[in-house]
Length: 254
Image (cartoon, rainbow, N blue to C red; front, side, top):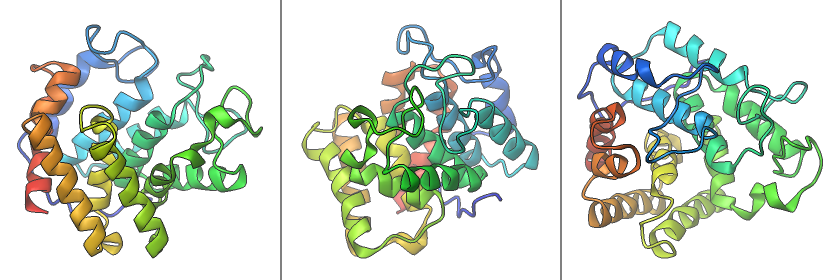
């Protein structure tokens, strides 16, 4: 099932051009790899793959081939026997982080709702604990309940309508980024939680809209724009930077 979306951002780069420019960034495991200077670890593949597929949607693709490639790339790294739980990469059971799951969910919202739905189902069944190194067992280190706004992002990505309390928790999660980190840390992953909420009209409210606008103003204050922020993370010539202009447009229109 492909998630519905309004694609408010428009397009500044064709998805075919974006695909072509991104070809050198795929690794042997079918995951997106980062620049050595900004992402020296190879364990960010799921996170970066999620960014790629969100940007691919915002460059205009609505291709069933891209939906299939997203599902194939993501599911091949799922923990065997545990739907909704992932390894960092196939055969490498390093502990996955909530950042990775946030981006899998964001991409799943646009390409295949079943992926975030499995993540939410697994979380509810296991008290929001996601430990791929010890599946199904409680572990405080990987209890995502300590990030209530993150859990709401999982739910939105799965196509759920949040309750008033859940919308409040989502807003507070974003405001933590604005207040506590002063906008200079965590903005990249929260950007994609914000974009998912922008594209989920059934979850809009006065508080949500105010939070989204405040987040964007904070990005402008500290970085200049969404492309400028991603240029710091990935390098000015990275294809993510040009493609992300559509996200900037979506936020400015919101």
